[in-house]
Image 1: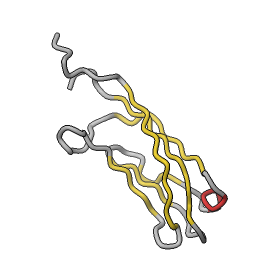
Image 2 (image 1 turned 135 degrees about the vertical axis):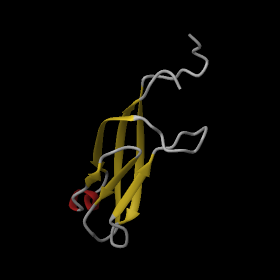
Image 3 (image 1 turned 30 degrees about the vertical axis):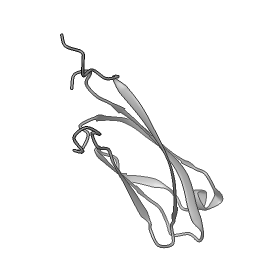
Amino acid sequence: MDTSNAGPNSNRWIFDVEHDAKDVQAFEFQLLDHRTETPKPSGFVSHSLTPLNAQAAAACLRITQPDLPVLRVELDAVEGPVKYRIAIDVAHSLMR
C-alpha cells in the first residue's frame, strides 16, 4: 500500500470571524483542497459556533446550510462588529 499521499483521518478547522452584521447577515465557508483548489470532498462530522462578543450573542448565530464543502452561517442584524468562532470537524479517507 502506497501511503505517500496519506493524511490524517480527521481535521478540526477553527476560524475567528469578525464582520459588520448590519450590512452582512451571512457568511459562507467553502473548504477547498489546497492542492487542486477544488471543493474538499470531506465528510461532515460536527460544527460549533461560539460568540466572542455581546453583539454575536445578540445576533442569534445559526448554521443554515450544514453540508460540506459549503457551510453557511446566518445571523440577525445588530449594531457594531460581530465576532465569533466557528469550529468545523471533518473526516476524510486516508487514501487520496
